[in-house]
Amino acid sequence: MAQLTLDEVTKTFQDDDGEIIAVDEVSVDIEDGEFLCVVGPSGCGKSTTLRMIAGLEDITRGEIRLDGQIINDQPPARRNVAMVFQSYALYPHMTVRENMAFGLEESTDMPDDEINERVEKACKDMGIFELIDRKPGELSGGQQQRVALGRAIVRDPEVFLMDEPLANLDAKLKAEMRTELQELQQDLDVTTVYVTHDQTEAMTMSDRIAILNDGVLQQCATPLECYHEPNNLFVAGFIGEPSMNFFPTTLEGSTLKGEWFEYELSDETVAAVEGTSDITLGIRPEDIEFVQSDVGPNVFDSTVHVVEPRGNENTAHLQFDESMDDQFIATVGGMKQLKAGQHVKIRFPENAIHLFDTSSGSAIRNRTLDEIETVESVV
Image (cartoon, rainbow, N blue to C red; front, side, top):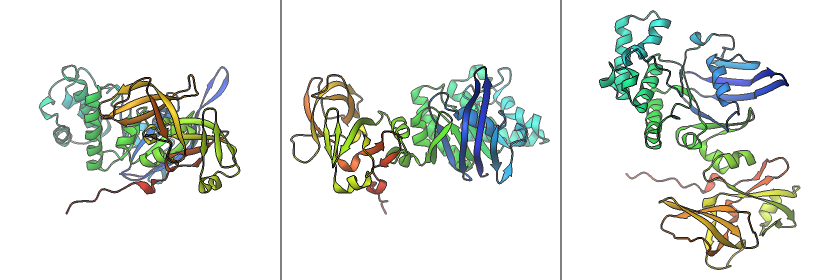
């Protein structure tokens, strides 16, 4: 177990057009035993960051420290980290036992009987002991993934590094492996850095999420903080499925004037956005309310364009009645029926809206986590 620190870590590449900044002064303190997910769109620098931690990429500037010791120049074999890849990287001619033992045989002086004991224990923990003498070609994708994880476990590393390890699995198996990985990491209590482009993995598995865009760290916070209190427009739009709806507006007095609607703000919210005139209003699909009348403020007429039934909920693509093509999304419970072409009234409750400076993208006002209710334990 170890504390891992990235201090203004930067990686640049050179091409014919000059310098390309792949990772730009990323700083994160990863606590001992913490599970950190690194997410972002393709090309944002997340895998490059992981490879720098592993020692597979040189660092251009900054420091990586493991328990306070700078490891920038240490070779991968001396960093006491174990990496799990998307491709599993198993040797096809070796059995499960041989694949899991190989790293220890090559990098340590550990006796064969101790190596074998570690391998067998890891296989039992991963539920693959009965497969120990099979070769990778005889295993399913999920079984191969367990072997790759077991190979990392037997090394007893200070840090696990995982690069989209579940990407090749089908949806059902991926959900099962998410749970298994969480339980495994909690049992081992090993500091883990997990790279993924799948925000569902990040939201469900991590203690904190580090969100990158164009090599720049946008936010590093708990899943709930990233979802309900995003730092900026990018984070708000990236986290959440379906993503947050955004409406450009201009503040005039206490009114946000958009292209298709006007939104009245309370005095408290007006004070919070003082000094900003170009404001983007954001609201998550599940926070849009369907109402029966114009009772209360900020009720708008809209038309259902498309409905996507999902079983537990329905995703409705709406448009304001005055709009011909601009659409936004609302979700309702699966037992509430909507039809395309239906005229409905909707409300944006003020306690659920997010406001952003349109120019900088920075959040001005988010909904707060104070509304979260804790489920009480039954004695």
